[in-house]
Image (cartoon, rainbow, N blue to C red; front, side, top):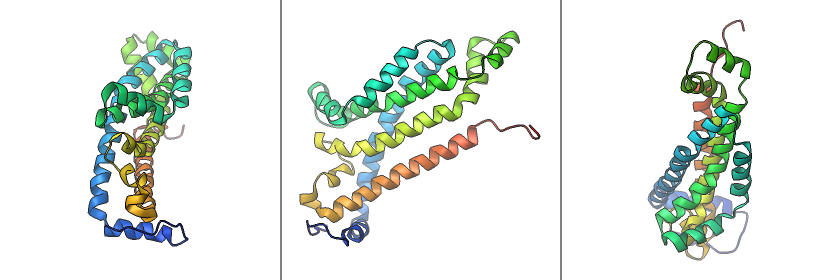
Length: 224
């Protein structure tokens, strides 16, 4: 394993790529653990926050709740959440998952609410007049129209979680943050190389979710 000079220099950026090449297997292993942690937290957040946001948006109620959750969630320091989780859940995977889940919920809940609440009420009234149930209106009318904003919330949460998961290493987590927070062991080249990997993951997540949004969004009728 490379132990680079601990003094920063312009060539450190190139050394980061060398570190990736020389430690590819090790970094792939940490990347897999990083994704496992991030996807678990994001999945739990989607299951918890998205249905609630969609339901509140459909009812046009809960604006104060959505805004409050968004404000509180964004103001909570990640390290504080992880430290609190250590007291409750101990050190390890589930402590970090719980902290990242809390950080992912605000954007998913808020975007879910505004995506549905912002749908043209005339279209909703027309669907209701056609005899659609409230569930059918939500799933067949409001959700397809609000999907881009819903996916934007999930994309923001995914990027935030993947980037923030690096600090899980301070609470016993095993991911790319293990290299980033240990420059004494891996050198600056290791820190830079692992940062490149995290940046690549966030970019890939943004591109994939953007492609899903584009594919799933309603397409305008020809000539409309």
